[in-house]
Length: 271
Image (cartoon, rainbow, N blue to C red; front, top):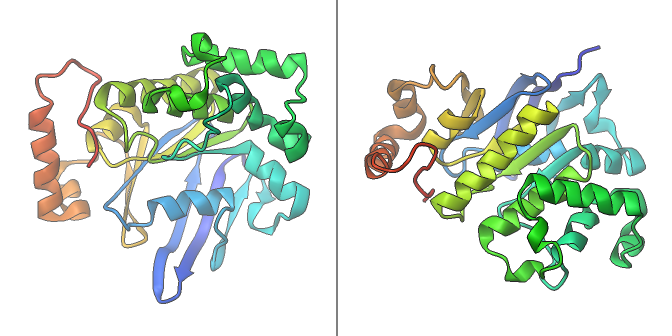
């Protein structure tokens, strides 16, 4: 039995459109994987297939020898808890305070009504505070989530995912709507969790410099297929040209030029 996350011939069709086309991957525990490609390349659908938010038309997903595509009921809910998902839209309850939003990450342990009634244990509250502390958000713990900046809200969403105590963390365009400084904080938070916890992280990204700066492994998708799978060093300009086309490469080079004078670690805001 392997501890790897394994996708075998995974395909997803929406009518006449093939969003993900016969994708096979093996992701080792603790890898930080960036998924890049043009809009419509299949990046978001790929992550949703892993989390089972979208069902495959064919193929299979397995983890630690367990067939994920066969899970139902409680077993499926347990998988979604163990494979935490972070979205571009934050998915927080604006009127609730930050701490309660994070504790909602314990939903799978309690059920919906119990979570909404804030019936959490002292241990769970301590777990949530520790998650917020790791993301430098303890001072905001009792602040309403809707009053936070976008970058702060996304870090709350990461803390919420952390209290699920997942084995895998998926992030779908987590910095697409953020300014460069907040994007850096979010990516730094994900990288820290990956390094300190040995947690597998897969993140969809629009910006190539971000993928190169943070990811151990980069997977590029094109028309639903894996077009490139390798390291940042192997992601040459020639490969980028093939992935994005001439216009995409020109846009990328323009973004690099515009950020050349910025401090190390900051990058252009995605389009």
